[in-house]
Image (tube, rainbow, N blue to C red):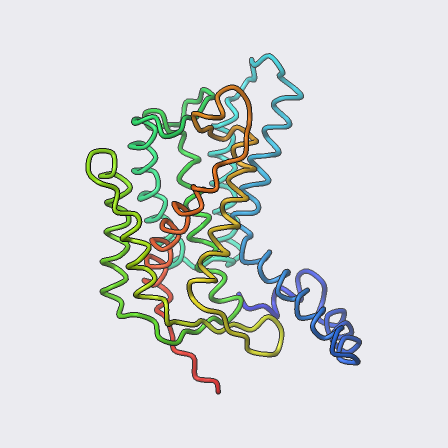
Amino acid sequence: MTFPSLAHETLGRRFLADLRTRADRAAASRHGFEFLMFGLKQAWACLFGGTMLALLVGTHLLWSALWPDGGAPIARYDVLVVGALAIQATMLALKLESWDEARVIFLFHVVGTAMEVFKTAHGSWIYPEASLLRIGGVPLFTGFMYAAVGSYIARVQRVFDIRFRHYPPLWTTWALAAAIYVNFFTHHWLPDIRLGLFVATAALFGRGWFYFTPDRTRRSMPFLLGFLLVALFIWFAENLGTYARAWTYPDQADGWTPVSIAKLGSWFLLMMISVVLVSLVHPPEPETSG
């Protein structure tokens, strides 16, 4: 779905055109309008993740209010599974995601769930509430949180018409993604090579830029800065998720505390896996503008 469709569905073409005309009268207002369009497009690209996050926080508040002592007729985690399926089905029905994107996102769902089963078994984090729809100690809604990252990466490329310069050879990105994924498991027994993976990521993507269109003008940003900003946004979302007790870390057992900033590195690396998986359906296209 293109952004003109978003404009038609949300604010209306005429309203946006009028805002743009008014904004063109001064440089400051033009930049302000472009920033507004950037925010709207980001929100549209985050549709899956934003809706899922609202579901996590909303059910937490609702269950706490209606059943303060437990005893809910349906486990909250099971409601989250059904809600996540409904979100995904709605996005496909409304063609907000293509089936090719959905298949890759499903693959990311499987990759994420497998890691969740392993990590919870080793005590990295827990899911404190009971549920029926789970694999071992992992409720099935968790895979959709990983899928939300894949959905964002896929949608943001279409929404912003993203193109690249100096994108590394695809086989090198696959090798990097495989090494990142394997290290998430092996660092429990073998030396953690995370620092080496950061260096490898910088070596592959350090000279690259991506180009995007918030409104009418093409803008550019270094790969690594863009990846870091997305990882930071995911870290903020993780704080909301743990506040809603969708999952908890060991240091949050006695009450919620902010997620360690060290987790930002984990999300940065995990996001690189998502970028590589999405390249299956959205191969990186070179920027051709001047």
